Amino acid sequence: MREAVIVSTARTGLAKSFRGGLNDTEAPAMGGHVVRAAIERAGIAPAEVDDCVFGVAAPQGTQGYNVGRLSAIAGGLPETVAGMQIERQCSSGLMAIATAAKSVMCNEYDIAVAGGLESISLVQNKHKNAYRNVSRTVTALDSTAYMAMLETAEVVAERYNISRESQDQYALQSQQRTAAAQQAGLFDDEIVPMATTMSVFNKETKETSYTDAVVDRDDCNRPSTTLHSLSALEPVFKDGQVVKEGKYITAGNSSQFSDGASACVVMDAKVASQKGLSPLGIYRGLAVAGCKSDEMGIGPVFAVPRLLKRHGLGVADIDLWELNEAFACQVVYCRDKLGIDNAALNVNGGSISIGHPFGMTGSRLVGHALLEGKRRGAKHVVVTMCIGGGMGAAGLFEVA
Image (cartoon, rainbow, N blue to C red; front, side, top):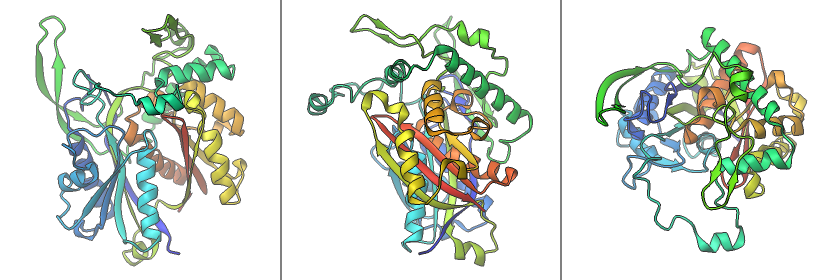
């Protein structure tokens, strides 16, 4: 069977949803920006691409058309390039890369662009469709199937005795690691600056104006964070129908809403060699697993062992881990349950400090893991995350 290699990666900076530089940028525009950049970095002609596969949790600006095809068009790819949209919530970007890689391995095509994106700003707003948004058929079988992610995190913390202090300590670590990585320029090779027009809302006049901006870095992290400031934050979960309030999950120990896009060029290893390209890494495999809906955050605990077993590896064989930081409680639980060395986990921070555009994060993690893996001389890296609805996904890559 053929090998699928990743030869380039490109992403936007992650901008705060609703008030950041991408708050008025349509999803296909972000997708097109990173598609164009990834192809340029790979040094291939746009017409050589067979497919453009994009993951997204909640499509925006598509009018029912798939965001993979729209991103291909916006990225300057010719009409001969097909496109596909994939959705598995927070693993959508990872699934897109895995899907493209498997098609390359099966000789269905030679070159693909794959990644993910999310515009939370333009979807999770007052215009969001809320009509009959819960299936009675599903809730009759699983009353927790539509449980809010915040509440599932509260359940995990309570059920598995993850203290508020340990969550805040982990969140502080994420902030500190990201701050150090930014200062060292460790994200610079990933980010492609994007000129945008952002909306600015005046709270006093209630008017909205527009201004030019350039998104050239991640703007979500807070380097001045302290354990004291984290511990002072109030829990954010409140159930308006039941007299119930959270105890653990705050704005400081959970992932941040942000907008962004990421893409990789995936191709057959022999084609890459013929073109004289040096791969960043090799796709080795993927595993997914289900778990209880009300504790969706622990999905990696089930997906990772399944992945490693299939490849004859143990946790100690993995040199670098990117475990998406949806909430600190679930990262702490998964890390300790799986026996992951904290020194090899999210070494430059994660979604708590960097931000989490749902469909984009999986692709960002793959690109970052391969680049950081090269810097550290790593061989095997794993990208894993929990998934809304009660699932986990894990992907294995070998650093080239």
